[in-house]
Image (cartoon, rainbow, N blue to C red):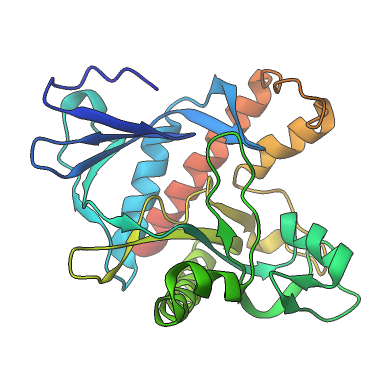
Length: 285
C-alpha cells in the first residue's frame, strides 16, 4: 500500500494491485490510482511515472462519455492525491469480471486452442491468434485475490453466482458499453480488442458501472491503421509489459518477475499518455 499522507479521517480499507481504497468522512469511497503496474498476478517492482493520473483521467473521460450509470461522485479530492483519485459511491460489487472480446487472443486464445470454445461459447474452427470475431462476445471471469489467477467461467456460472435476471443485464450492458466505446476509440484511431468491466449494485439494487473503465490496464487497444487479418499490431496497453516478461522471465519458475528496463517503462508510459491524448483530441475535433 502506498502512503498517501491523507487526512487522519480517511480510513484505509483495501489495497489492490494498482488502487488503494479509503473510507472518506462522508462515508463514501476514495479510489486512489497508484503508479504500480501488475502482470501475471504479480505487482511488478517498477513504477510507471504518472500512470495513476493517466488511468484516472482516462476513466473519467469514459464515465463522462458512456450512457450508463456509474459510481463517480466527484474528482474533488485531497490535494495529496489530486489528479489520481476520485470519490465514488459505496456499492455491493458483483463477484465477476465482465470481459467482452471482439478479437481472439490472450487467455481466450489458449482456451480456444484446447476446446474450440471460450467460456462455453463454441467458436468457428480455424481461427488464429488475433482473429476478429463476428460479434463481441461476453466471456466472464472470477475475481481472484491478489496473487491468484482469474478463471474464465461460462454464463451458467454467472447465473449461479448472481441470478438469471442480473446475469442477463450485466451481459447486455457490457456488450452495449463495448460497442459504444469501440466507436469512440475508432474516432481516435484505435481498435478495441477486448476489455473488462466491473459492476456493483447501489442501495436501490440498481446496476452501476464501477472501478476503472476502458484504460490500457483493463483493455487491449491497438492502432487501427496497423490492424491485419489474424494478427495484432503493437499495443497501447499493458501487453507491452507482458510481452517483455514472457521473453525475459519464466513465469512458472516460482521466482518473482524481474525489474523492467527503462525503455519498457518509458514506452509504456508514453503509450498510455498517447491513448489519453488521442481520446481527448477525438471529442474536440
